[in-house]
Length: 133
Image (cartoon, rainbow, N blue to C red; front, side, top):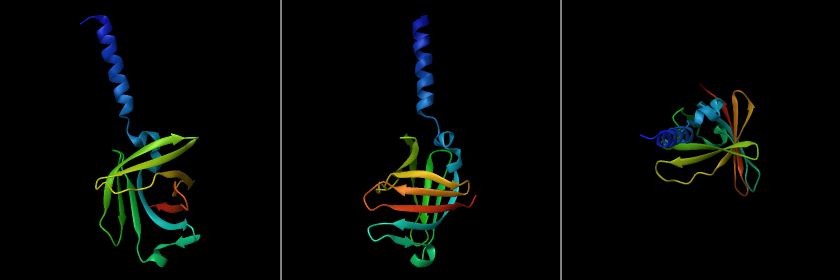
């Protein structure tokens, strides 16, 4: 094999590996299990909590780029997630296995054990979770 072909093959291998880098390497503090505390926002400025709604939500992000969203009164929703950096902030895109639509969300951490996810839409909600594990 000529040297130029070896060089090209090596470059393609390195580029391919960087494209497939796991999401947890980008934002390791996101990985784990999170329990919903409250959601605020919407047109009417609502505040929703487990007590006011009658359900709980557990959200788990795995190192392999998969997530599980489980609302206690529904079956779990699973799929893939992708992290995107835009204008200095992290955003998460979901690809549920059942092809259901989920809004892209902006990520921030109020504390190491407090995750906030902000929907990107008109009359959006912000959701606060605390770390379970």
